[in-house]
Image 1: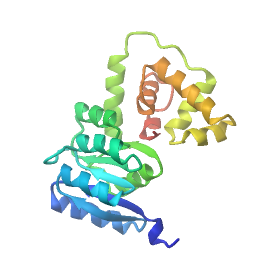
Image 2: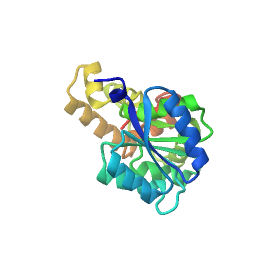
Image 3: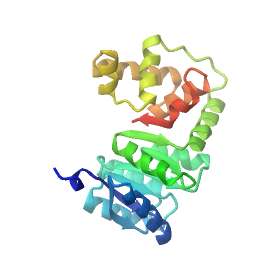
Length: 225
C-alpha cells in the first residue's frame, strides 16, 4: 500500500469558499490528510459523501439546503463508516446537544488552532470523538444542572476503570485488553455506568462523572464512541 493510500480522506462542507480553502490548505499540509471533495451546502455534502465515502466529513452547522445537524443524521443512517467532525463558530448549548444526539464524533470551534483541528480529524478517523474544551465545559454545566439534585449510585472500582479508559479514547476491545476482560464484559460495565449516571452515551457518562468530581475535567476531551 502506498503512502497516498494510507492518507485520511476528508470532505469539507462550509458555505464560505474562503473558509474551505483555508481549512483545506492546512489539512493537506499535514501530509496524512487529503481533501477528496468540498461542498457549499448540506445537500451537496450528502451527495458527495455518498459518492466519495470519505473517512471523515468536516461539517459546518449553518449551511443552506441542510444543516450540519441534518447531514450528520443522514451520515449515520446512510454512510456509518464516515466519521463526522463539526467545525463551527457556534458554541451554543442547543447546537452542541443536537449535534451530539445526531451522532457526530466531534465538535470543534473555529477558534481552534490548525494543529488542534488536524488532530481532531485524526482522532475522529481513529474512532474517537473530540470535544472542544469550551464545548466540554458547556456540557458539564448542563449535566450538572440537570442532575444536581438526586443522589447518584457510586460506580464500582471496575466500572470507574472502564469509564476512565473510555474517556481516553479506548474502544471496547482495547479496554478489554487493558483490563484483561472480554469485550462483552466491558459492554456490560458500560451499560451499568450509563444506567447509574443516567447517560445515553460515553460523552454523557464522562461529562456526568466529571461534574461529580469522579474523573479529571480534561478526561472528556477525547471520547471513544
